[in-house]
Image 1: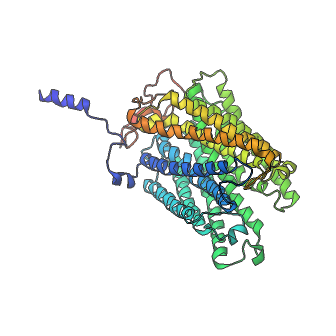
Image 2: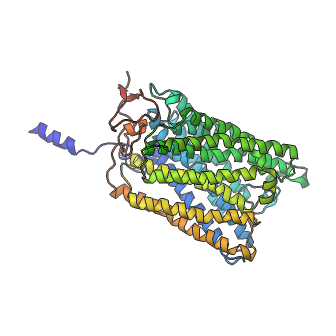
Image 3: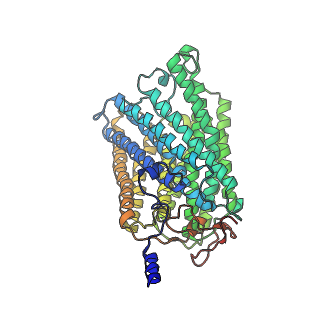
Length: 550
């Protein structure tokens, strides 16, 4: 009788996983579990995404009419500056590595955690410390220099440049710590049998991204320190009136900030590789080419900063060299797109929401990439430099690329993260709204820029209004498309259907453990005996196991 009762209790006992292993705020704030830290990042980053989105909405409302009706020119300067800073440094750069990378890398590698769990938690606190300085700068009056902090304006500006720069400086250490942790983890904590060429392309992409993070971010930190020294002590470094060189600032800034573009887009490419393989149920065509193209992009990314400076007085010869190198970096990017397309050919394609975002990514990334070739051409760049053509181009890459991949990845791995499914109908509607809203927002800006409308202007000529109205209407649709996932994701955490361990035809190790995963990820250490993206007819557990401690 007693045995029967115990057996019955055992049957109804809830399964212990990382979400319910401990309760209370303290258990979250002091956690060293990479999965919980990923969710802490998710909360922080989501706040900044909607804060940056609110600034964008204000900008588009202001540009609804040719004359400045809503805010003063000074307020407008601060609005687009804070939109850029918040979105780039506190959302786009950390979003996929800090949320999806943190959650998934140990799972994909068959490891219990990252190599340095405490440093991983420290990186989240460092991120938030930088965020506090940034929020202070916003509340105290904002910054009016543009997100590039070009000198001598940033040296002489009376706005809150110093606390904002301190916030970005501190935030950079979070990026470095995360990159360092990922590299050591990938080198040392792969499961038995998981060779380099069995790694998911998501891991390759994060490896390349981490190299940029630890090599490039210190350059930005040094630049910010030099800017601070000039502002506080009046030492002539960048200000020509003090004997400095403003072009030096641009060299240093873009030496980091162009590779930073690849910090944003490389992880997104890793996500898309996973989605394309899973929802076409095929191996990625030319796996090794896609893997090495990530490393090639990381290397070439450090050689093309000068294409931001074609009109900065740098020599024509230097301009030609940077123009050539900028064309060259398109090759590894094109390799990825061609190989994804070849993978789709004759694939068993499923039209689930993550795949819709993957298709959206490919289309928008192609437009963004092709228009980047226009900007790499010396003569054309002079014509469209600092116009809305540039704004449209980098939003097609950064928002159309990185955010589409981020949302696609969130939908794909949401069942693994929460153990719950989201409402598929609402998710497809959201993906459709995001795609339509995005194109209606930013495609007119290509036309505005080509016709000569400069960026960063508070007022504009009357004949640009129709395209600006279209752009603002698109931004409204895009905003609805972004809010919907937040609503149904929160709903699904309580009411969503229970997810299986592998609701998709995923082939990676992360799908071989339960949803949500246990605290230490796997019951036993897996041994990998199959190649990346080698799909089976069923979704049953497929790896051999090595007992813990053996």
